[in-house]
Amino acid sequence: MFITLLYTICMLINIITPCTRPENLSAISESINIPSEHYRWIVVFDAPQIPDMQLPSNCECYAHQNEGSVFGNAQRNYAKTLINDGYVMYMDDDNILHPNFWDEVKDCTSDVVCWKQIRKDGSHCLDAGNFQTGAVDSACFMVKRSIVGDTRWYNEKYCADGCFAEDIYNKSPSIDIIEKYLAYVNYLRS
Image 1 (cartoon, rainbow, N blue to C red):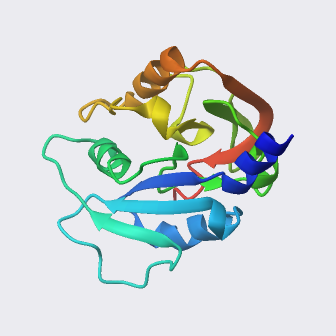
Image 2: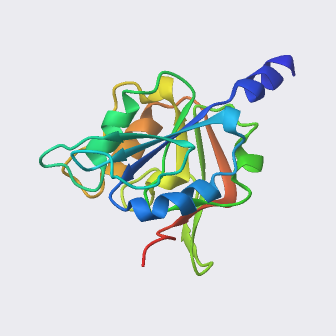
């Protein structure tokens, strides 16, 4: 029990958001219901510089471009280099967390934690635990940094989330599957 309690107190979730839609950041910020000592939010703009606008105070902002990269994959790879420990979670700039997110994940200790994903209209989107291309999204799992290792997102592939998830799944000795909706996909898309 002491080890679990100690781990819970020290749990850190590093949220990585590749960003081309900075207007969505305040809504994402509002959805992060994790106590401030338990998360770090890294936003990487696919731009030559950080936009000159009011940005949420709870995020670290960086600018990183890479010729040939699509869908924020180079930004995800860049942000990963800034993280040494804790969990890594990738959340696109049109996704938000479910209000129950922290309550459901705070006691998890497995190498990978995954959950179901829901659409804005409340309809089911993705099941938990499907680590295959086409059946997983970047915002429906988190993985310990030690498991991520040097695994990278393929810069040029739209389905890079599935490729990355498959690679992580194959390296993970332990997985927690939460059969609840804990993230909304494309919630902030107009």
